[in-house]
Amino acid sequence: MNTEMTMSTAELFKVLAPLFAIQVILMVVAIIMLVRAESTRGPKWMWALIIIFINIVGPVLFFVIGRKNQR
Image: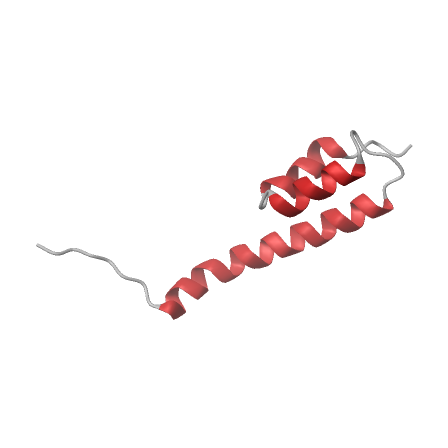
């Protein structure tokens, strides 16, 4: 019995497009906030690499632990 499930290119695009959009939005917002931040926990170049190369998790890490409170 062959129960192989195949996805067409259009179906695959419908699934991956929202994830790609979320990734790009998170990355752009995180980079903008990184550039505008006066100080961060750790060097800015390190956060830039984390944001760019660690998909979805990198920007979230920056938002959670990378920013210092500006008071």
